[in-house]
Amino acid sequence: MYLPQHFKEERPEVLHALMRSHPLAALVTYGPRGIEANHLPLLADAEKGLLRGHLARANSQWQRLEPAAEAMAIFQGPNAYVSPNWYPTKQEHGRVVPTWNYAVVHVWGELTVYHETERLLAFLEQLTAEHEASEPQPWRPGDAPSSYTEGLLRAIVGIELRVTRMEGKWKMSQNQPSANREGTAEAFERLERDDISRLIRGQR
Image (cartoon, rainbow, N blue to C red; front, side):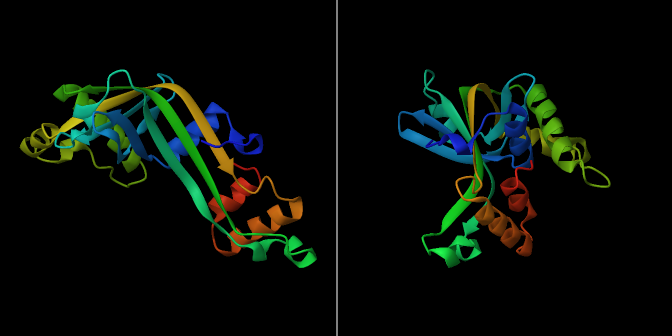
């Protein structure tokens, strides 16, 4: 990833916060047919240095893994178009162009696959607990008929990516003069995109 120093984000807690708030990742692997990618929610375990998820058993990506090749997960955070009209310097000299602000995390590591039913169920309970936490009555896998759940468990495989390195890129107008950064932050507030205006102002 092209990563100028002023866009680089290296703090592990910030990278993990984006992965938790935007858990749908692109899982990229290499195999006999070349590069493959699928999109799936991944659960980040900072203490163990793992990303955990599952794939449909019918999805052949897991069957075509190249054992010696790294896998990669890409997490896409807040992003949006930036208009030159938001820059005060447009009125001064006109030397401005559109751009795109975004925050992303790239994660590399060794990917392993497992099939054990109990292990899969334990993971799914943790995954749903994470995403059901805001519900008044959180759904659990045990709420569905056991025969139904058992059938679904046979239709998936578990995956774990043991993290070897991470990169974060927060492209949030840091290369612009302070007046342009403020103008951009205010424009996103008008658009009710506080998720981006906070990042422009250096808040996480």
